[in-house]
Length: 210
Image (cartoon, rainbow, N blue to C red; front, side, top):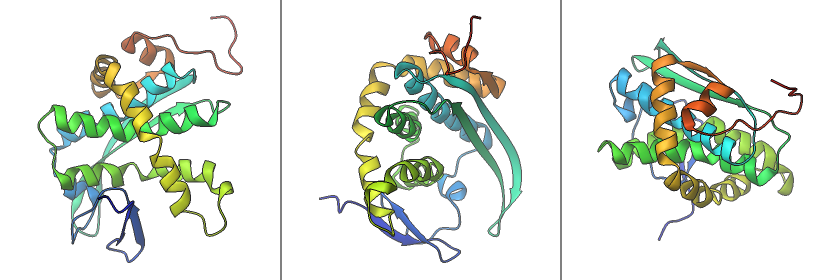
């Protein structure tokens, strides 16, 4: 039976909390993921495509989607760090926003499986790589819990994973198409992302006639 969450310690001594169990020792999630930079970039593109497709389907206006890739000197060794950002408008129902946040990591996990790259360690590394998404969700949910509030909001956020998985399952071709385009171009406007996914970009709060 799953214990609900795992508490660990990062190399810098800070506590970690994940749904998946991590390796006993590790230096950074990039090295645990252990993928060639070009392959890692495709996975990151699918992660952002998961966010974007979920947003489009849930009525959230997508402003743009972007990837960056740069060499970074970590304490353990130099790595090529790939980061992504899907910018959206936030005047949306809470459940839609939380499902959209969950869809990035869930798309990344699904991509690992479809590409034959999945392992427990890589799955954990992908979850760790999505900690910014979790932090955003915790920021939304922490008001429901007494301080210090992290475990409760994180557990509540994880309840949105099934909804994200269901959305991704029936729209995987859209996610894959958008992911390929983003990996190739690195930056897409919201309307370009919507076109690649075969969806309409919902109007933003300040959007006028195009």
